[in-house]
Length: 273
Image: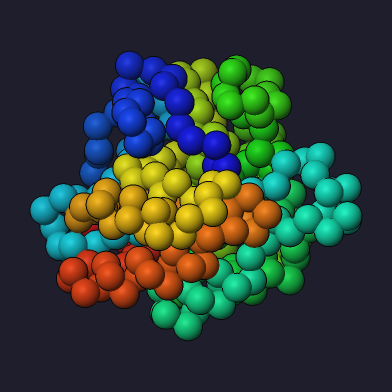
């Protein structure tokens, strides 16, 4: 999600901080229809109006003080040459910091990222501290005019998501979650309909960290801490070249949130609470 969310339906809200959007109100979880690589049944939401893919934006505001930090591992289908030339789309220092601080987290990974960094993808997928979720294969947009991203056609949306799950299986991620984050945060009714057969819950956010292309870690940390509420989903990135401050932000934000009495959880726990 290296770009921020846009307004796509009447349910989207685009404010000064550009928070995420949801297509339907928060709904009670039900047993999951497993995504292609899922072997267990983590909580998902019931389908939205008309049977559309449900959208999750944040958890309960009143049931505890839980917050989910999420990290998008972005890489488009055509960025292999840039990686070969030395650009870093991974961030081992960030993952090391999360492990050191014992932070449960959800990593929304593109299939292309998993193929470029198979050892890291496998390590994340097998570490109980983390859960791997789907961020598409190609990181192409699922709507037109989504911050300059290339666009995947409507008849290829389902295949793109399933291709990412297949990539996860090939590199050894044993149990990718049935959660999907739209590239750029951009979706519309057509995209939700296209993904209905996959059985995923679309996961947006209510706190934009602002780490994408940021150079001021203090400003990013301040934006997170000012925006977090009980049940929040915070969107950050696991991409050194495009989000170089994120490790420093995590090292500031995590102790501050814990000092305020927040408990850090994976997205699955927020959905199931």
